[in-house]
Image 1 (tube, rainbow, N blue to C red):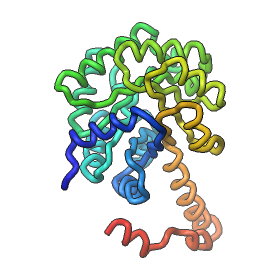
Image 2: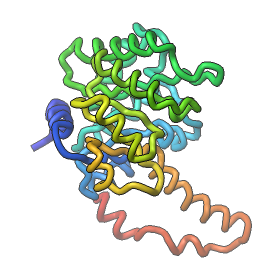
Image 3: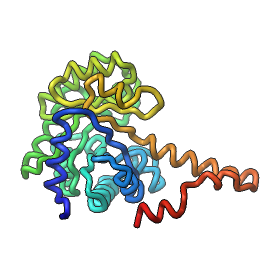
Image 4: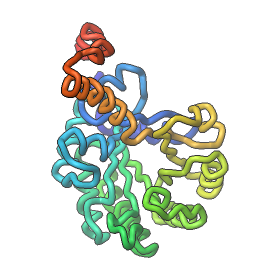
Length: 271
């Protein structure tokens, strides 16, 4: 029996009620289907991974690019997809709302809005404006009773402002403004993670683990509800590609090609 968009959204919300799950980040249809094949129960898009796949740097894709990408991902797999919707592709709350409404129509089960501006001099939106942007996203999601889960992100640790008190204050405000899940990418220590989880309880927390370190078990023990890896899987894939291509280009040898994944296994997985 086909899994409908409504089914995916209901399943995704249920997953946030208890336990801890990994939400890996594919960058195209092939990687999404591979992750479904491996048994993951939900996936999240990656702005960076997708951007690299179409030859652009992160945060330089368009709303059209992302909506087409999300529509393709959601249509290709039977799992819920959470959208990395960057900053909503607009500054003003009303424009964020309009773009979120468009994003919801791609079939996603969840969607995140971050508070980074992309400007070096002022990397985070002013607190009041950041809250209004979350509130506008919430209203857009609720307008058609879509059931899409909204994640509020504070990017302080990623933009050179690693003040945990500021991050927690913002996450609490985003929760009050309607965010269903909270996310502070860039925090790494157990103490930081635990502090965020406790501060926004009972709202669920997403944790980014894009580097070696804590295990799923250790992160779950801190009370985190879901774990994503951002662009890390895409970077690992690019690393293998670049090693092999650089060897051919610079040495004229093909040793790295011996480490490729089995052709037969790939055919079987996608068959």
